[in-house]
Image (cartoon, rainbow, N blue to C red):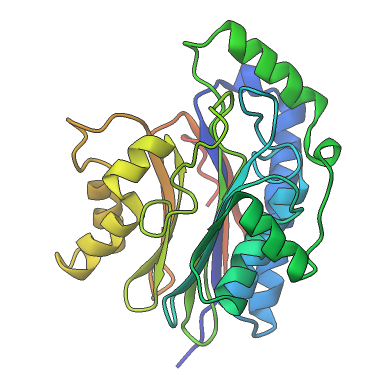
Length: 307
């Protein structure tokens, strides 16, 4: 039987026009997506694990100040930085997550280390940072994470509280040659958020979920809404208990309790057969995927048809 390996990534979903994004920045996003995708794909091609692949892809985006994760992450009301991340292994349903950390260069690697080397699933704030130091993970000062663009963006946001604020998140899902699924998500949070706020990304079942039997999911969008709708697990439940195929489950998960829970729900999902869904309500989603040695799919706008 032919072995498949697949990776899909997202760099967030937003409501903005082509003119607002601009050609130069679009090209930079496309290059960033390709770099992240291939970082994970090469691990899968060499027979590596889905967990290692999603970590590598997300680390690449955490290094890129264009994306709202790691360096260049959004700033809170007091101009501080706080990161959330989670990773889940669909093979054994082990998971690791972190919230409210300030100085860890790669929050997704801290989440993976929590999964592998601690008895816990979720660590937060200074306790998570102490664990990171104990594990000798790379730490950085505030200046590394803060960019001039995000400082200016926060000032603008404070003057225009009612405008839509940046709430991007990055993530990846993967299927390795052994049939294992994994999901990873990392974020700088909501621009101008209250210090201490935690969104959906590090909450297993809300923003991140993986189970070899069913699917792997990573979300981005309105964290509060995704938390209350339990979106990642909702995709899983619709497939597991309602026996829906991935495409239908993704479509239905976007609509469940929409009459009571506001906010955009956007996510990527992958099933054990290697089918990928990019589901988003916004005008764009930074997204890419690659299956086996097939050509890479990379898109930003809703009407992109490069696949």
